[in-house]
Length: 251
Length: 233
Image 1 (cartoon, chains in turn brown, red):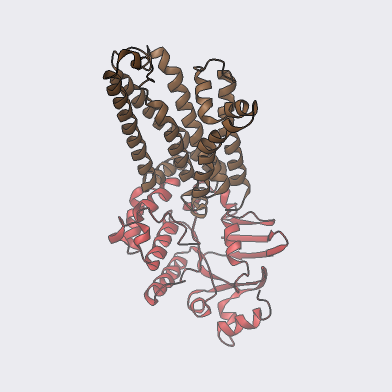
Image 2: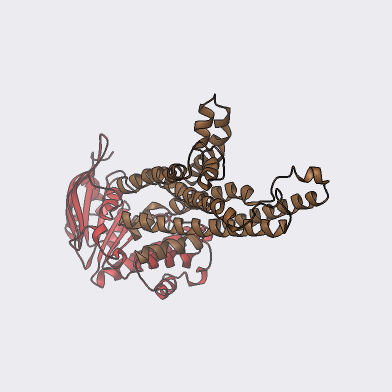
């Protein structure tokens, strides 16, 4: 297993695309920090009555969906970028190959997610300084941790979702499109459904699940535990499909 | 040694390989001949566990390929030189394959020198010529210093120098006592390289014989065409 994991790690870091993904995450963090900075600057020059209407300077809300998508693309790359013929000749034990890929994507997604959330929340907090709510995103660490934890979990899940879909469909392009539909397309459509389907369907979309998992939405359709289960189900279902394809189909 | 026993592969209603049995022994180059679509590549893929047989089995050194611990130390294969990530550098390509089987990194460097690619080790594979990619594939096959080697149409697209290089390499590997199994539909090339031939058509064994016996009364091409006439696709 150690050899298979070392090979997967070497494969990942010896092509350009993953470096591009890490760079894109860095750029989106910079973009998020800029937004926080502009909001706070606007806040400082606004009258007191206007200041009370400001949203918080939390940039992690902006960057999380983008990081989810980028990490899912990384999962897709791990699944599809190397021809299966070569990969399976080197590691013919398909279960071992699957575990190595899964471990790599899970670890990379978790590390990238945790780093992105640590930077975005930390910078937002620093930019807001000692200003009062609503511009200050959180009053203490106890406020930020549930949200950050839920966001990191969602990033881990989307990484594995990208891997699972990639293993199942064996195409990077198709995987990225499917992930885009799951993360952005469907959540944009579900609010337009007739009542109460709009609420029920939206409640199980990834962007809303993050809030529900964090337990920061009053009267949320799903309790944090149920929301966590639904979120994890995304990874389980797609990884199940990917596993079945890898283990059963010819290379 | 490679043992193919009653190997069968069906895709829906189409039978690609039909109850095929033969043995590839060490110390000689065994040519695997047959018309296009005869099932040569499918057979090789099943030997490597890439495709699952509908029936029968293929063993390398008495074991299924998937059951070999660190398989590249037992079997080296070049099935498709294009089956690589073209954005990766030549040395990195060999490094990950070596890492997957616990083979030291220095072996990748040595082999690139050995196949004449030392000067392009830091070039991305997309920048290499077809002949260089073929050599890179050969280097990957030799990484684990295996006793069994399999090549599928190894001289396709090569210039005369490359053809001779592959031929000499296969001969020298066989002379070292290794099992060398090579598929081709180029009769002239096989006549110069192989000691023994396995001929298939429509997925079935047509003939398994020493080259000498086949060419006693004429050219390999004549003998091959006589054996396979009417058995093409």
